[in-house]
Image: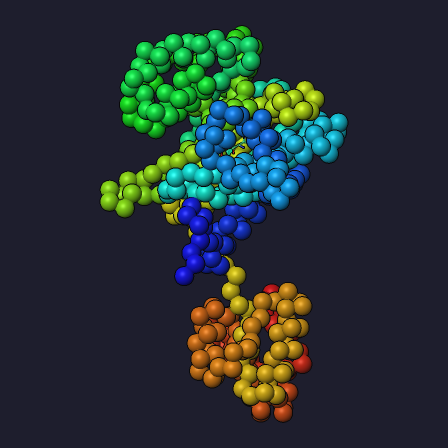
Length: 425
Ligand code: HAM
């Protein structure tokens, strides 16, 4: 048997309704905030991610699905959407349009990670990017978009925010981190030892208990922020307070991608339960931040940006854990059960006409007996059934049965579509 690659998922029809609801809600919220949809390729030139996401990140160093195409060019399956959106904005000249430019997307992403609950090698994101505004007000609006989405989905998430500084103040912080962690170099995990000189901020985010313990007393970024970054953060906090969005400031939020500047944030929520202890497991369901240098880095003009991406797999899991109704709601309105070939001909036409009117109708196409047709109708949750035998075809009349009330009404067959639409009113 051929099985799916490790870390990928099949999303089956019983599960898709909650995905559709999540996507629909995200589209509605994006529209409410004035965002337009953008779509972009599944693979890009590898250089885009090396430059955009950053050479020293885990994503670029260890997790990319990179291949040579038939012409020997290095291509990579997108590990995230921001660099792709930025490339598209530059290439299509959107940077010259009226600002702010607000874009949203749904995308599959590919990262060669160690699969676990809520962590896959192919996963899905709903992302938003806002260009052309550098103010704390734009940060607050982006955060409030995510907040509105999560509330509409019935997910109670904790918001954590931080500032990781800008190109003026971050180098000093970097130096302070390197000299702090150097004292503990022998105890750091292999990955963090490698990060010490290349990307010391990532050590703050390491999951190894020893690195976490060492990181507890590391210098805090807040002590190194320049005046502009500190004041930006203060204004953002005031705006969030004013809107009534609760948050916690967490200097440990550093993010795993290199393009961030100033504000970064994460929404954290339960997505699973431990099978043994029954304890809730929490993960970041939505994360983002400001990236004021990325457009220039990828070859465009100076254009500040801020955005986030929510993992759709995690949003779905969080809704299930929260006990939200994720059931399928689209039940068959009318099931037509024909007996014999002539009746079947009639039934095919009748369901066609009903569907043309936007009514969800079904009839037998398997060749089942009446008994098993009725069982099937019941299984599909059909509201009404109509049985068509020789007699019904001859007289042009049939009995419409309301499956909930058992009420039976005689109907004219050539009026079946109008009668069913009236019944539903
Ligand atoms: P990220 O933190 O790498 O940021 O991913 C965003 C979200 O995608 C995560 O919070 C999580 O919900 C989901 N996610 C990430 N990796 C996985 C995985 N292996 N399996 C399942 N879900 C996952 C970005 O991708 C940035 N591009 C976000 C952004 C947009 N920043 C600014 N604009």
